[in-house]
Image (tube, rainbow, N blue to C red):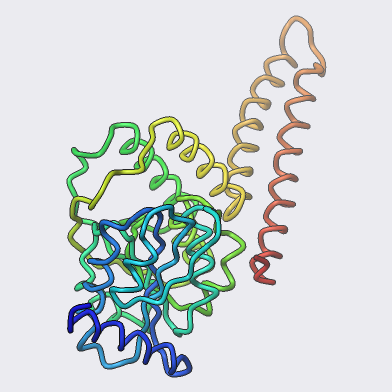
Length: 310
């Protein structure tokens, strides 16, 4: 072990012994990232070296079958190893629960984000509840289906939250752990956890800021799959509707059905077959039913958000 590595490892041990004074926990979810995770950990150590508060690095190994845990531990991180793979979101939730810091920083393990930007994000705390790194990237290099999915999800998220969202699913962000613990119920186990984390703060009236950060090519092979990512896209849209602002969507749908039913019923009332038609009644009943379902869904979401069920 090199002197520098030993120093990093010693710093990690000291941090583990003084958990009560830790201000920040950097959570790094990782799955088969042995090529990148070591550099990510050392970059975090270098980036936070002059930060005045105590911090720790927690790498959550999501059941990797390579040397991810060993590489991360040698580089100076505390490692939480999950016995089987649960997904990005499952690792994020495990890291938030295990963290000792008052604040949490999330950072991808593939080397795409510059850890030196973490202090710039931390400067906006505690004024903001969550600060996201807004990627300055070239979308032309992203697969077409992925680019289309991300744009659709972003527009849907802005409509649901009523806020402008510069980067919805950034892999580099800092936020208050206490608030995140109340939002864990809304975080799925898959990749859309980052999307849900942003929306859960926004829909709960929390302050979210964005800081431009560089975005680099990942180290190692990409885990993007066109078919599964398309399914992920559809699932994320449905989850966003049901988890955060169901009434906004159900009410819009009810209004559309109602606007179709009114002219249809008026036309039938003055047509050759005057009277109330079964189809007209069905449309009005459907509009009412959709609206009531939206009310019930909104009450359920409000109850879960209030109790912090997760």
